[in-house]
Image (cartoon, rainbow, N blue to C red):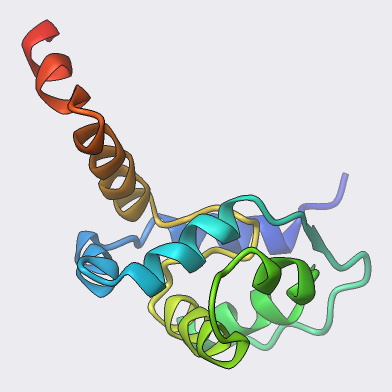
Length: 131
């Protein structure tokens, strides 16, 4: 069986996650909305991958996105406000490796958002007490 180069490359990128990525979205409602919208988008990987260039990790990151398909219309329909601004925010989130081409999100950002939601409902303190 042939190895899935796309998945292997994505796994390598995910192993290099940095917690500082949270600082990009912290305090930004617009960026947070794009992250939340991204979580529900149906993603597919191209059946025939483009030729992967051997190079730095940025080249690998661009190759991963080049071989990813999703409905931009559906994504941007889930983000309130101006589409152009949402597109710019999406580009920022991709450049900072917060959104992954498999439809997932940087683990530190996901945890940050989960904790924010729990605190909105006053569940964060009760969870800490139970532990």
